[in-house]
Length: 231
Image 1: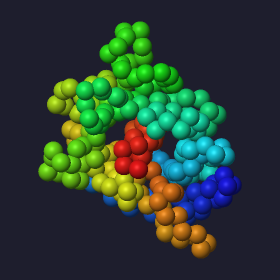
Image 2: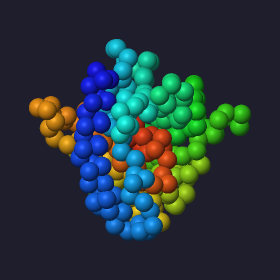
Image 3: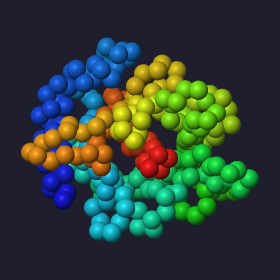
């Protein structure tokens, strides 16, 4: 199955996305500096499935057909996901923040490396601190239904200033991560090209486009968060 995914990644990205690479990146960067090289865009094929049998997760393949990231959820816990590199080294841990007095928990934390156990970052000064907090937009409270979530630095959403905003529809695999100040698109989730050799990808295989200067691991963490929020 990995060989099949490598094949569709190489064929579709190199012969279609990269064939029109300039137009693709221009579409993403209508408000960005023209000095950014479109050839520096990173195109990743995301497969919503683990390579390990009977294990939920994700497999991420680069445009060269090599494994880039993986998620293997052995425990089946949806409130904690560990993003690993190709060798299995933990890069980021995504955790849902549980609050006892709230009916709906809409905050997620992102930590560097691997974090185990409970995830109340205020409980102990010795615990690893989150580097980001992502807050799901509650549609009933806001008029802009296009907004999915806000991303805050340093693991707190208590302030009013967020760093990134996520817009679009994850259910339709059409999302954009934008810089809050400049409104520049830094990453985008796209549907995979419909049919290659008679195979329809549907929603299980899609494309993650990462703009120059934006971390692809963090962009993949946004995918994992959206999957937890809206799947």
